[in-house]
Image (cartoon, rainbow, N blue to C red; front, side, top):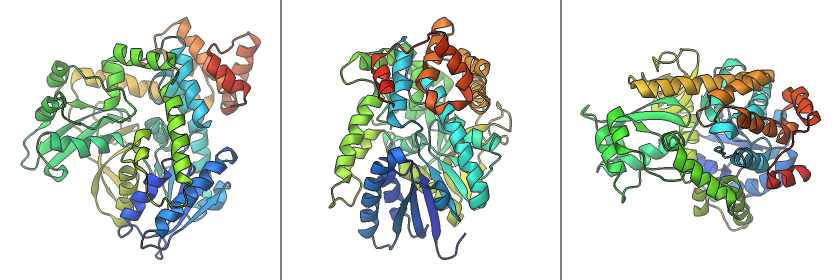
Length: 466
């Protein structure tokens, strides 16, 4: 790395999360002396990138540090000699997420950004793009670390490892960070008083907790989770319905917030369907409104700090995940960070050569995995099914194999198998045609057979070229 400072490139720079990222880097400048910062986006994202770049520059100007924020639509210009590349992009922007949510819900299935049919299709659109980015990195910044926050983070990171053959990659998620910040206070402790171990895959992991004397406190935290006055860190974008206490006590592990989609599927689906039928619309449509409000705030020439409204976006503590990881890689701190990385024996119930989300200690040579606790029988079975589903999705994204895509649908726990599921799959293919060139032949076949999208709002988006 350059002795005169660090060059960081953020792809998807026009994201509303970028001020959170800037705040994190400003806070950690002593650990990570940044030389230059580049924001990269596509033509459709240029307006937002320009707004957020001006906001980011004001944040740096209000700090004691002389850092310039550059913008470009030319990814290759930015990547040259980068030390770290962070990714936070959404292929198809928010209209694509609206399609991912509304089409499954129009058939009574969960429509969600990283779970169920929506998560599968977000991976299909994203994986080819991340692999193109990796090819550019091999040429322009072969020593850089790729730090991925693009969802579905686990599948995207695994594709980089397996199909991109790029080992210097870490997948990030703010969900473990939320848990480690919020949970200690529920049992009268500070974060530094506790030792955490996480194991699973992104948005489908569990954890256990010990105090510094080596006594396990997982059970105490589970008890505290059911105190109505306790904030245990559930992300803002997940409907807060209680788990079944007896189930958690029997398993002896704490699930992540996204497990609600699997442990309380009926209630979560009903909530999604209520939103779908409302004037306000699905989570994606709500996020679009929040984003519009955020960007109006970002335009304020006097605003030089992250606004509180950003917490409504669902990405609280994003910077703590991203910036801590980069700072640890740069400074060789050995800090405990939960990452998606190659398993290499951390979770005995999964093969060594798959990506998992586990506790790691991060230094200059990358993350060193902490061996996971033995998973209970039920959790082990769930995890193996989810990993198989992820791998089918990744293979379909790389090959355009429709049969492999149907297999991913069939084994996904949130998708009832049968003709209705196939219909959802086919409509999503047609709705996302622009971003799925590997499926072009199948999409042409479906359109020739008269398959059309049922949901009216999605049809309106398609008619508008979105």
